[in-house]
Amino acid sequence: MYTIINKTKGTTYTCTGDWPSSTVNDMLTNGDSIIVISTYSRTIKVPVYDIMSDTHQWNWEEFKYTPGMFK
Image (cartoon, rainbow, N blue to C red):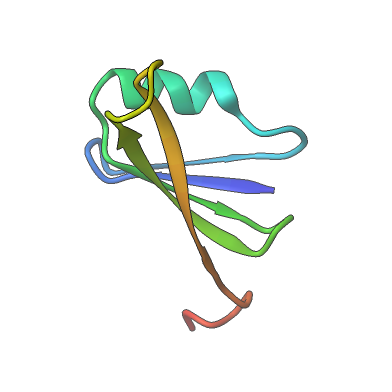
């Protein structure tokens, strides 16, 4: 399961299955500030825009987490 927290709009979106690439790309294209929590990989993912790449794409910085650690 993925939980996308959109700080810009103050919303949370949850989805299961594959990586929600179209949803994430739409939010990033709109300039939204987001983080993604993945229960599959137990990581918190923060988008980082890679201006050094030829394609100018988003990369993801990952931080490990344990479910329940924010209680």
